[in-house]
Image (tube, rainbow over all chains, first blue to last red; front, side, top):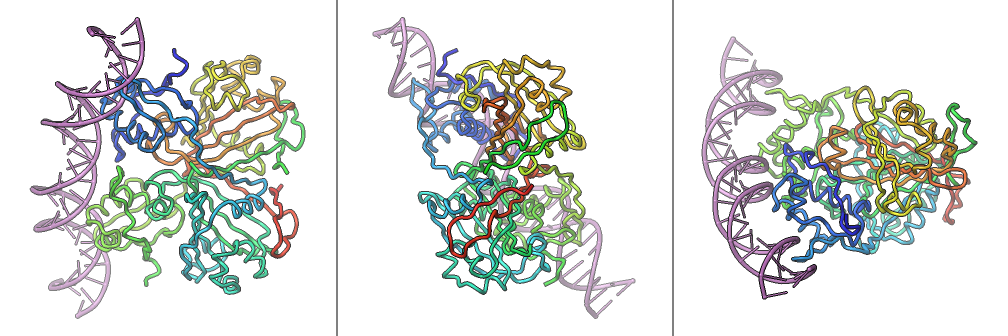
Length: 271
Length: 271
DNA sequence: CAATCTGGACTTATTGTTATACCATTCTAT
DNA sequence: ATAGAATGGTATAACAATAAGTCCAGATTG
């Protein structure tokens, strides 16, 4: 086996034909993920279209379309007679979020990224947000929709809900120019505690349009509740992040040496 | 407005027709996400098909198909003359991962969930894993593919890579019965440090088959490098998690009181 | 320079999506 | 009770997209 040729170890019989997603797009997704994760190293050459067609058990033209889509994304380059080559040096800027140093992380974000204020409206909260904010469903709160960019490329879509009594202590102008955490501090409700839930979701049309991704493509979703000195909720954030531009990074270490074969030990975050 | 009727605040003009994803599926995804996140409370009634068709600016039959798909997932119930009602009490068991108490979390998982050993093979590592393990690409390592279930429903797909010199200190039989962290301890390389990267990815055919989800559906992906006493990598895990059955939960608090308008403060995890 | 690899372009059968029109059931106001 | 107006369900048809077969063009390699 040639070291510069990717030896696809993909099980062919696993594409699902009973799906609304066309085959060529499924193949596109698989290959893109393999490229992004580094499982297919850059500068390496794919097997030919014919061979890949056999691998996936589809027609050659189906593979071709997937590869062409990758090429139009700039992830691979294709040349007659030479083959399809994984584009090297894909220096996509990547934002790294971190739990260890949440605030530093947010501050660095604030410095290195641009924030866009898309909308500010007072809305009645739905059940989920109401529960987190500790108010009755339907209560009016201030909803701000913001978008964060890195080098002019959007990577996160943020919907924040702030109780009216806190929100009325700053202006919409402030919102556009000042970090929200600072505004909350000034309003007398500094965020002291954060609780987060992290999942993955399909991009819905609203968010996908804002982030420039396809509807249904995977996004990292983070729901965050910020609480003040008395444990009172001061802010709820629903954040959606492009996984190709944003990644959460966590480093933990064990608190005490493990006992061989023993019970659970505890870990804590690095400082 | 009736309290039991969901007042859809969905922007109609945002469905993207220039995509491989059909309209009915985009609508399905949007509604499903709204139900799952709690934005549409359970027991509430949707507006009629006709009205929703206007909302999304599509034909009634397109909305119908989305709603039928939701119904066949058991998320809503539909009755002639009555309408479409969000199914209540969706007691889907959910596993909660946590960074704060990584090991406890893993131990609880080990107790409350079932682990399946799907495959153990010695394979040459790809570039990405090689880098994390600090070995040359192509070096042989032990790869174990495992699947974790909660109440017989799979929720995670785990691929672990262990250097051969560590792997040969335990048997495959051990692997099937004993937690991996315990095996590593016994092998003289207890995991003392963990580094994780969290993103979202589309399910590729291999993982989707193992987890029982559609190809292309969103999954939470966690890459974890475990290191020993001297910082030597002892294990690399590539984990894929079903977002409807697994969620990461993090609670952090600020280390010191913030200075109003001041510089960055630090946070750390709750203990 | 010829054989053979590579990807590209064209045509076509099939499938899937979406819309229009009409039917069945349930609820509600009379 | 009963009529009307909700609701969702079914049938048909136009249209678009997918995926396969076949032939063509450029590059590489001996």
